[in-house]
Length: 423
Image 1 (cartoon, helix red, strand yellow):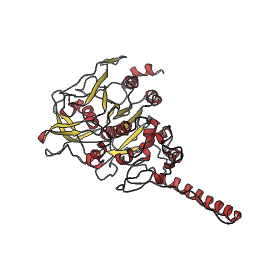
Image 2: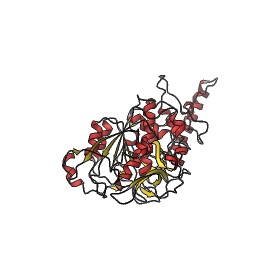
Image 3: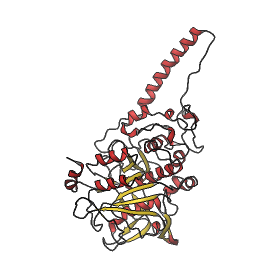
Image 4: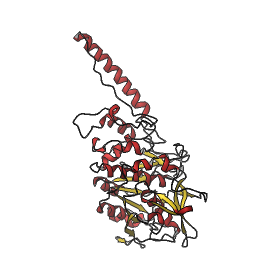
């Protein structure tokens, strides 16, 4: 079936919203929530604020009248037609529609300007406040839960030459063609991994997509983390952002309300990549993904089922030039193969022609786990035969150690069944 021919029948595909809104106390301090502190966002903003980077947020609908988006660079780029026909309608703002809250919160987490209607006029400062968001509306009527099929929105984002696509929905089937086209265009596709206690589903499960899981304020995996191959984890439990509260057609925005799910972790990862792209504009989409999986905080490079390649770290992401990585999307491989094919030593300093070992790469002094280092053999001796024998013996030891290290840290992580986890 052709990509265009699928769209009529695919409208009925399950499009499950990934976020569970959780009321927050009236005394919430949305300008300084735990995720903002935990990711050291203020520190990162001294190096980059996302300027010059274009992020596509493909979501239900948006309320651009909220104070968080006053002064933000947000452009409405198209909407799914109400009758499901081909072509795009004009997107618009929905200031009183309850189901516009999800898209508004996702956008605010990226480009929020710090103003809001919380006590003292406080609001959310986004992770990449100077980036430009192109918003694509897939819900033709945000007073209900019905959503249109987003393939043409992906197509338009590709035409608009965005750098990153942020998509916080799951069970969106038959998007592989559009995802592959985006990847060919050099666009990083970031998607929420899935719903509570369910499997990682499309489009997050499509090869090459950054599948985002959630952690809490203690950096522990969400208790309802989706089961499958995660790429990275980011704050997603009790994330202060905001909701539209009230009747479906007479709702109002409430700044600083907390949300939980892989939905909310997704724009934080997309925004983090925007910070990197802004600081290192020559880096390709593939190299941004390489940087992402090799720069997690709190442990050596490796893979675990519950946290993917680790917890996102803005310090490490911004510490070195991503253009030193191979221009290949490592997530096109399964985690085992990606771990083996692209070790830390695959990075080469773009300013030199010599490979740079992981031990020489920047590691913040306050990061709890330094990056793994490799050891090169430089043994020599007075007798040639002693040297050769020593080299052969050392090579055998290194091969055994490499085999043990690879098999112990890299997990295959096939999708299926269910584990304890949430959206």
